[in-house]
Length: 360
Image: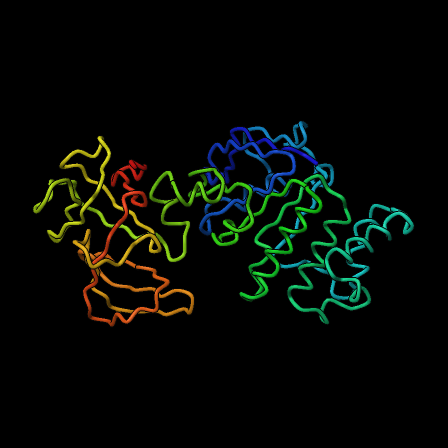
């Protein structure tokens, strides 16, 4: 078991800095997911924790010990890659046993650990097979078994599900989370898939351009994103946005967001910092929008309808902005219709358009 502390960690290649002053405390036994778009620095950060990349500056502590200059094998970590990295000529058993044998452990010491790991990962019936005789999910479980047998204090997962099909990814997400709940080791998990982050993490670290945008529990980040980047990155379909200017409503009391084409979106509330004339960006998640027959807050000109079974997605335009409305109703709405919408005040997000920071 190990807590991990990163203080002012940065990475520079020549004159180019790719990771900028990362401060992050990970509790003993916590499952933390680093998430962000390709090139945001999340894998580089993990590789610095693993000892596979030199740390250009800052301090890394693993279990209270400064690890900046420790060799990877001295950090008591195990890493699982997206490519499995199995030896094709070795059986499943020998792949899992490779590490203990390199460390010159006796078979009487490591065999019980391999048997226990194989049982935990549903590999007991496959120990004599070669990797080519396994499915992608089974190969990833072998890679996980090899990591488990080492009995590390810290697990590192670098996009381990990227090579699997959609059904296997769902299955493996569950298995990795269940493995963590049984072993209770500290886990740092890297992915660009925000669904993986939301479903697996105790806490999520959202990264962008080598910096941390926000840290928090999955639903905290989903419900109260700190800025436009986090709001747009988390959620599928993603949050709807419309830029405009706060103005007094043309009809009725209160304020509205006046869009570029002159149309208005009624706002039940606006922060004191968003006085009339302020440039703001409105955000609303598709599932929080209500179709109404009352006086609407906005109207959607429907262009495309996507039924998925449990839900129906309506795609269209509001004041020239592309929006999606998600409903669980079996809708009879057709493309070309204009649909009246209500935007519940408790689900409205307002951001400063220039800085991107959250207002309400």
